[in-house]
Image (cartoon, rainbow over all chains, first blue to last red; front, side):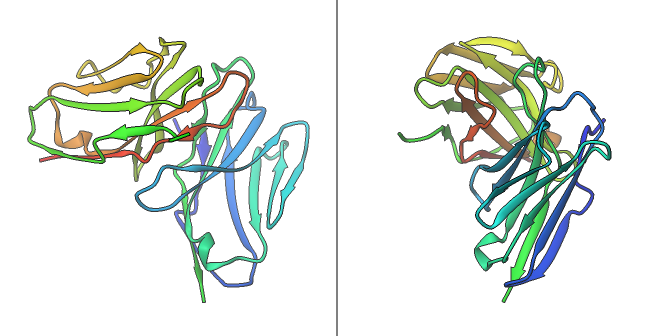
Amino acid sequence: DQQVKQNSPSLSVQEGRISILNCDYTNSMFDYFLWYKKYPAEGPTFLISISSIKDKNEDGRFTVFLNKSAKHLSLHIVPSQPGDSAVYFCAASFTGGGNKLTFGTGTQLKVEL
Amino acid sequence: DAGVIQSPRHEVTEMGQEVTLRCKPISGHDYLFWYRQTMMRGLELLIYFNNNVPIDDSGMPEDRFSAKMPNASFSTLKIQPSEPRDSAVYFCASREQGLYGYTFGSGTRLTVV
């Protein structure tokens, strides 16, 4: 039972354009969401997060949007750069949920020149 | 701070053999997590510890898997006997009390032939 879903296994975007990565979740108890970025042969690294009391959080070129009614979040990267090419994982947690993160299957982003 | 250190980086073993994966968390981090990455399921939580005590091992696939944390600076994940379907990348992660974001190690790529 995949509680966090990333339905697009891959995404290709041209340099300078916007990248939009999507994530859906089924557990309405989730109240904190994170995005991790993973390069080959490395562990995932934290990118950006959002609490369920907000609908948007921005950090430089990265913005995460949360739509609680739709149980959907998205990560926007503007402008996309070749160094952004990586696998992006969406993750979720909930208060009282044992402090553990539930991850999605990941989306491979390729930013082309 | 050397980060989360995992060893070995790569392990190739024959079916039926015992495999031991090792992890040294970041000093001062209270939580340690073991995840497995596969294409089909993304990052799956296997087990996590709080202050060296196993809290949730519901993600451990079967009795062939076991994990220990004898002290705050060391944990092992053991598979005995190993099977080809155990082939995956295994990540260890740690975090501080009160924070959501994890720091991951670089992973161990396990191949069982």
